[in-house]
Length: 172
Image 1 (cartoon, rainbow, N blue to C red):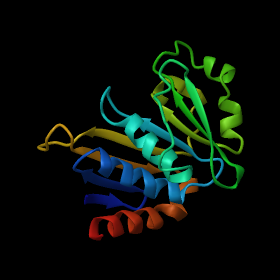
Image 2 (spheres, rainbow, N blue to C red):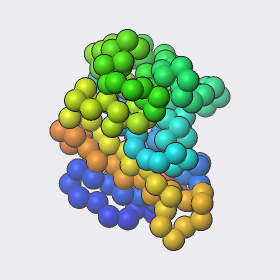
Image 3 (cartoon, rainbow, N blue to C red):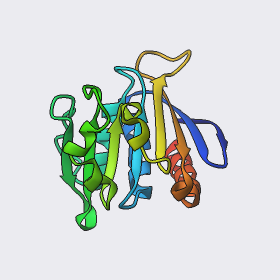
């Protein structure tokens, strides 16, 4: 894993493969707290579900089955200390208000929300969140990913933990 550039509230890393994506997700998971919203951005096949799988397994079990919620729209996972992780996939919703029907309010109120296709939420997407942008790494092979983390205000005190975790993983 190679750290590229960063600013005070953003980190940018390149990983070689899906296991690298899972390692980044693990670092993010370990810095998360109840109430967090993590918005996963990227094209089809960019690694959003792979990131979510790594994140969920970091807070549940390495063997946790984590299917894509493309058709169910949401999957829930009990995590450490009773927190519930809500894994949403909004690719198929046509109106942002449909999110209320599948539990977005509960996720925002004390759970952890991992949201694929967050742009479909429009005004319902909280401004205070961690944005995770995934894309095929420029100049890399099809398995390499560039992952950019952009932190909202509630993450500002945790950016150093993220940076340190990513650097430790690079050195390890």
